[in-house]
Length: 213
Image (cartoon, rainbow, N blue to C red):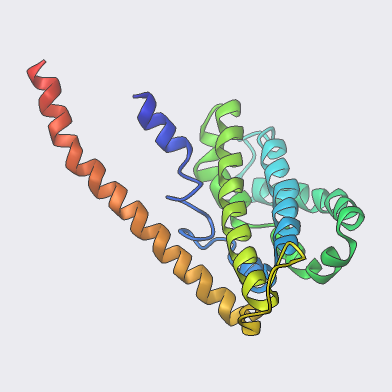
């Protein structure tokens, strides 16, 4: 029982990863995640805007019609955009300037507009907060994996630290970003499918064992 509950809580990391499995917020990673530092900026902006908006918007009464609730979600996310940019410009001024348009794209995204109503807000507040945070971690895993691979190949650096000569300068292009996200998605789906088949295979034996007891 506890094992099934734990499995459900970590769905957002891989099995329902919003980048690699659902494809809900792929554009900023495909285009802008060309280095580890850019990935940091994308992850922080996603966390500060989306996660905090999810926590705040939970207090919007469900009695309000869905269309109006959605508009309120967007308003809250837009309000969170201001302090987010102020913090990021202080911590990563140059990088934030370079990826600003993609941070703007993250302001109102499918995690906030879709997952809130279909998943997060159906749970108690504490469980919802953990579940939403797991989804943000899933986004971070995708962003850092793509960003680090592209930085190593295109620039030969790791978070700006020189490691070797560039291997593939074209790795910083959006086309390669799309390619690497596709490869990672295929790997993620293969692993999830294998685990799913393994779980189904073990289920009958477990039930028979319980029957004998």
